[in-house]
Image (cartoon, rainbow, N blue to C red; front, side, top):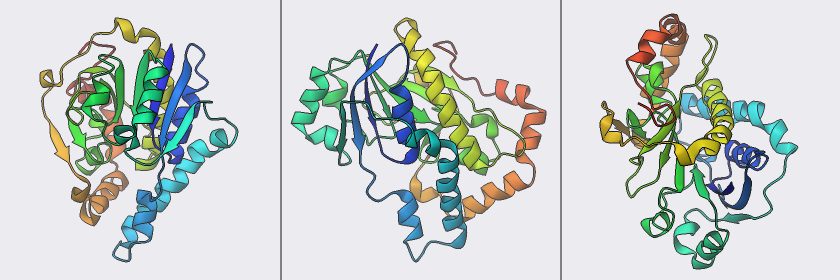
Length: 270
């Protein structure tokens, strides 16, 4: 299978695209990497209004990503046809768009990129897959694997593989996974382990994707939408308090029943 990737350039995105580049049953024929010139990490650390709790959260996130991904990143290579561009360039750069079209991918996979406009999406009907960090439509928008921990709902943690449409996180779903969680985990270990699991699962998913049905999101209830501005020190403190007070241990003691109340799509079956 011929794959085109559209992603960003934080260490987790580098890990993702370089892992996809070594999939055995497919090849990356085109890769667009949006430059992360001013990451959220730098924004928080350089903002004099950021609190100690906010800075500590992002320092831990940065360090945990390095623990999970740095060794692989330092010993792996980019796909040959990788283009490093400014954020959003895919929507405005006609030459870049033409190169993407000429690469003739069987499927395009986006993860961590900016919003992609209709004129590009429409060129690849049922061939444009987006990886959403979170179980959509239960949690949409920003921080979709943070808010379940703020709300004491670990059963809502996960990844959604969906087709891109004109909306934001509204496309038909083909597959979802939950993370492997351990009682000693924190938000960062859960999130980075889930990214590793998501990437490995993608290899298997792509081998079956042409024969998998998709589920419209309206068939799934309980939609919650959050924006970046909603995540503040109060919610951050609440999340860490929940974890420190045994939220994950309580969830794991009754995991099967709690997960069953939050159905997810398994290879096109809800």
